[in-house]
Length: 137
Image (cartoon, rainbow, N blue to C red; front, side, top):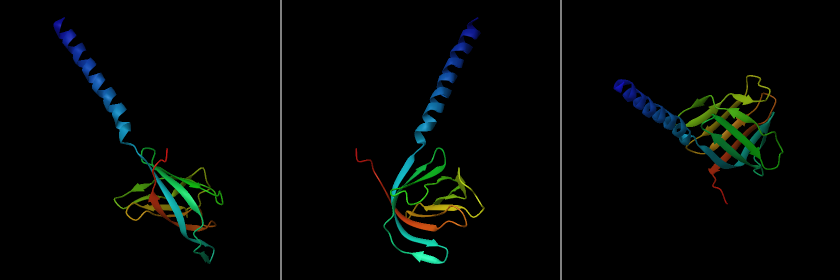
């Protein structure tokens, strides 16, 4: 009888520890936000160095996704599935809810803040310079 009570007590402790581990594991997930200015785009053979387009990029490290939010809605704002994380970059070759043609890519350089994306072979190639943001309120 004493053995059963001790076993029950240990099981409760183990369950409590497992519960805290599951709850605390989500605390390491981050959403990184960046304000990005377009520095270059190429549509077909035509290059454009006009940097009037500004957008917000959010990188969700828990879901492994990159979100693009255009300020002018001048282009579709895709959501990327991160396929590779290295010391230097977040990389993707898959756009979520979008037509993938095998020529899809996004690359966020973690050291320089440069973001490059192209949703398919017929869409323009974009290059942005990004800086971390902070909430204003």
